[in-house]
Image (cartoon, rainbow, N blue to C red; front, side):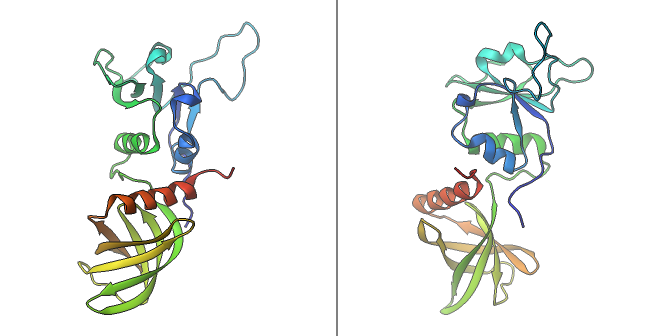
Amino acid sequence: MSSQLSPRRKIVAFARPEAFVSHCLPILSRLGYEIELSETPEADPGEGQLRVPMKADMYVADEHRLGEVPDADLGPPAPVLLLTGRNGVDGTDSRVIAAAKKPAGLHDMYRILQQVFEEHPRSTPRVATHLRARCHRNGQKWGAAVVSLSENGCLLRSSEGIPLGTRLNLVFDLPRIGTVQVDAESAYQLPPDSGLVFSAIPHFVRDAINSYVHAVLAPAP
């Protein structure tokens, strides 16, 4: 299973690359949200020609460039995600439905885009992987593989059946990061895999998983 999704929405940003944290835009593209910067249109207009405003399902705008977002000719305007400072949204522009502090980070952008576009939003990115794992429950130990991972949980391919509601301890190795250990519960099934939800994981473990997920999603240098 690939971690890359085909972009489904047209999102145009009236903002410079510096308004986003490093790798934010390419990672969002791999997650299905390709954001086109207005400074880099597909084709430059000839000298003396006016650039036709780009139509989009959503606009992202630096607070200093909100006036460049085109108004809708017919129907409701596309929503706007404002990139701003600590003060956030002032409510004067009804098109603005969300705000993120500059430089906008991956998790803030991802949560907002999920809330706007997805019927069942996911709070954190997930990547396909294949990590060897060990399961521990009631003195029993067995081998497994983590085939999909996010900071909140994973899909586990196990040599032993895991009934729904089962609580267990899961240990797996993250390349270049090290061994992590989490408590988890079997919450759903996607045969042949079990969906585990992590519970009360320490901050340093969450940070380690996030670092691995970002490394998988980030473009090659």
